[in-house]
Image 1 (tube, one colour):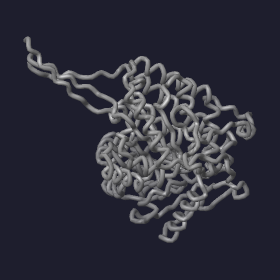
Image 2 (cartoon, helix red, strand yellow; image 1 turned 135 degrees about the horizontal axis):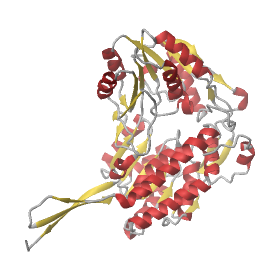
Image 3 (cartoon, one colour; image 1 turned 90 degrees about the vertical axis):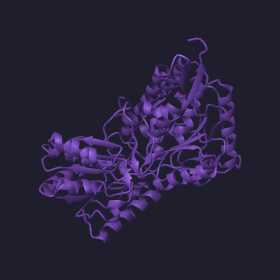
Image 4 (cartoon, helix red, strand yellow; image 1 turned 180 degrees about the vertical axis):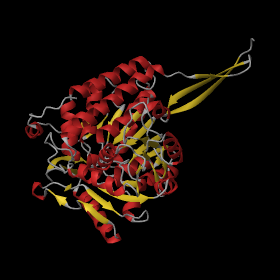
Length: 500
């Protein structure tokens, strides 16, 4: 998507008409309690809007609507080609409103407008398009039987799916859930993170404008301990798909067991090891990838390369290149098209990250770059790129997910040691390795306990490839045809044939 560098984005924000209510049964409504919460611009610290704070009664209503529509079959039993057309029309409307969605994403979450325009919004639209195009290209099966029977194996939608999405990529993560869940024929109740709910609220209205049946997609903004818990315990929700912290992911597993054993799929925390072997033949490219791998989106990325593992023989040279690359990624006004990094999502998240930086220093790690809050006069929440050296794998900054622009550098002597360090966390979302030896690349990638492994690159891929983790990074996959499968269930229909 073309970025207009001369556009006055601040003026464009002033003209925005922000929707801040829940979207249930095809219309905007206040929370039943009348409660709201402040939606704050991380770049300025100023309140954008008062958003409906949904609770149990609102979730109940949204689920009731979603169930009614599902049972009516206006979406769940719609001809696949018609369902595809409506989803494509929805994607088209999102494209027509791309600048509006990008602005909402930037003022809501703090990411640079250039990223919202060129990455988040196009990727979100592409997700909906790709999943829509898959609808009428999925085939069921016939099991091998004798002549006396016909065994049909069909996939059917689960029913009412609740999607609970994080604040770091609000629109994209919502679309990663909505695309396959709706493509499969489910009705959806979406709970965006309270820190960044605005794009989710807006795209629900666009879905109805595109011709999607009223009630198929409902949005209930609210806090995790109220709306989120109500979703987890709701007896008439068939599945919950969640992206967020491991701590909250475990709560959804608990809620499922306490209620109706609803399906749960989780994409949780990460502590991605970014491994640079001594035979890496392009340290400049690897250093650039390592810098962007941790400082992109202000480090607020589940698969951020927050642990840099470098062979000790090249560590000093590599670290100098990395520091030079990273120093150019200082945060700036998110509405400036030239900004390469923006603000932390909330004041609380900024404080959390600054506390981890303090912990790293207290643990004995060497601070090589950054470590401080910047742009205090803006009123926003900005932290400069931060790099620690001489980190031990047992330090908290090397074990716990910080979710901010903080990199821990760990040296190793052998491939065995690198693999052991890489696997030495509770997480297993992603990993990367840089080497010019194909045998090393294949052997290492096989032994890394991660759902995604990049070789000689970082954070690359497309909607065609599944994304998800091992261990306490969760289970289930977003993206690709595999994502559609998790929103369906298999049915066997055994037909006895009396003539053979």
